[in-house]
Length: 133
Image (cartoon, rainbow, N blue to C red; front, side, top):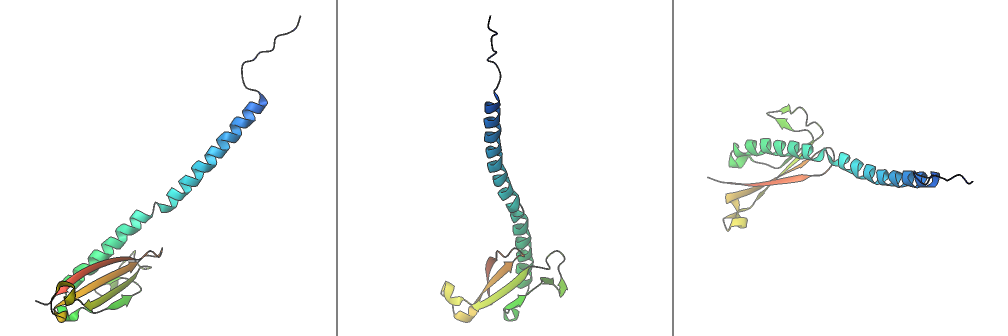
């Protein structure tokens, strides 16, 4: 009599193919995960840039119209003191007469553009206007 061979379970070839399919799927998942992990800091940096812009906009709001001037700073400062946690940020403030933007006399209005560049190098701009009262 012949012994019957059990047909249940996996053969060695089936097990190797299964392992290969799982390995390929894991490679794709790891690639997607690493891309997401590298971008997870972006919202934090954007929030820091927005906070810094709010500080500068508040300073400009309280300055006299004639005192607002263009300038660049390599490290953000508040009242002459460096702001902790922002040492690698770069600030550029551009001030131009912009009365014609609103059909006014040119010297009646200034457009103030604040460009903040974080250490990662993606500059963001914030624009406001200030009028002569």
